Length: 424
Image (cartoon, rainbow, N blue to C red):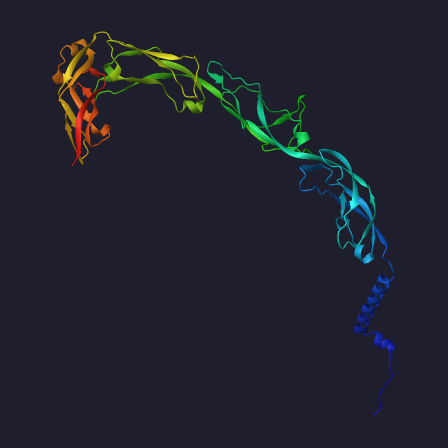
């Protein structure tokens, strides 16, 4: 058997596997040649390198301007290390020597000496940056309202109320130097048409310095912010109307003909001014209460009440008092004793025994035609435990005096009786 030892190099080189292997070997050899060529001082210019400003934790200063400064740095190092470097791959910092208080400083830019750094900084352009430092402060600013053009279409039917703003104070925050420029905060409302209803507006705040110049707050480029962008301005429009006055009575006997008690008021109506919303809840002006048990028309037939209106209602004519004048003509008084004493509404777990046999010196008031014929037997003294606190033992309880079915007659004063109460 005869072996064929002839080797064809041309055909061997055409094989794909041989081509790939040859390419890999060439790449490795080329890389080895480059890295062994001594290019340890390869230089590169890196643009847009940010400058770190590292304030110590104990400092009360903040960077106001200059924190986004960038520079150009020329660096050197192994080509395979720095070949793909960009601005963020190079660390530079500003020297804070001499920065002790608010102000604008020219700071030298220098390289950060970090462990394992694989490049050297040859030059920095520019070599310095301008940085402004200040303290961050807060301040409360009261707001003032400047209202112009506010009027109503008919002054006999409408009235302007006191305009308000909400909130009345805001908080601004920012660099101390700029915050201290602000002297006032104003809200300006300029109306062009008469108002017949309450107006509510959301308006911006204008901040002014001591010379009246506008200080930008919360806008682009401003370093001062405010916790409110707008505030609510309310301009009330009050309707002028007349509301009837009313008088109420307390301690009125059961079935007492109160409608027969004649009286007049110095003001049957009170002119008031209030918003439409308020007037939808109020239909009258109560002037007060008359205690019938204290109304002795033989002594005094006139009572004066101080007019008190709700805060939401304005006293348009500034009337301070309303006088009640009772018709006391023909009224007389008589003193009687009451022996008809009854107890009502005793709780089922108690027994109540009356110890008082007679209530003396009861003063009754009424027209002479009733009083002249009024006798002790016409009167009833009632003890109602529904209106009393029940306790055991002997004690005094209040008594109501009535003259049932006798018409316009009532008892003056306060009366008591003694009872004995025991649990069953």
